[in-house]
Image 1 (cartoon, rainbow, N blue to C red):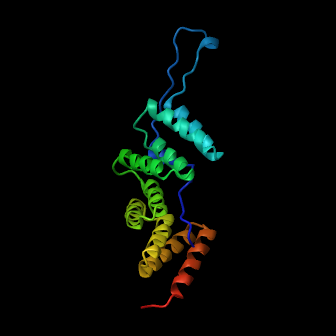
Image 2 (image 1 turned 90 degrees about the vertical axis):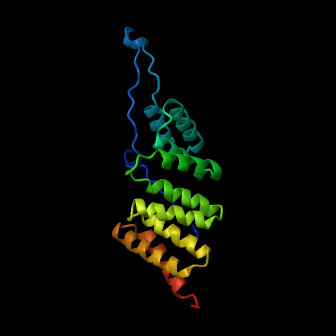
Image 3 (image 1 turned 30 degrees about the vertical axis):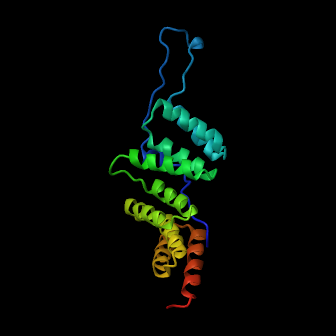
Length: 201
């Protein structure tokens, strides 16, 4: 029980994070065969998403970077570029992009994924207190984010706080079970069993 859970779900995230639609500009007055369609920020974002799905993370980073050059205020492009950098173990780049995604996400919109994933980066850097702060924000943004509870439990374990870890694992297990994520549920239950077998002070 030592690997954190990143939120890598692709479908629905772009909508949740607020992709801004941008129609490509077409050259007026030219025959259709001669029109060159320039890629919009949305086109480049979608191209990057396709590369994320095929694990071409370097290519995805290039596409998201180009999208951001055209439209700098796209929290979704920062989030997924951060995810690609995260998966390539570029911790500093991932932290910067997740932070920018959080900053740009409009007030009242869900930023639980960015907080959860930024927390996992802090945990990998062994800054468990910052990780816990981000997991706290993730569950405040979405109380059904089971991964954030599970990951916060791991950070508590690293800090030798078994009571807080046990509480988070139980919450994660309940959520995973209700969400039909049986493998994650089993992992959480295994962690609960391991913690309950530890000697109490």
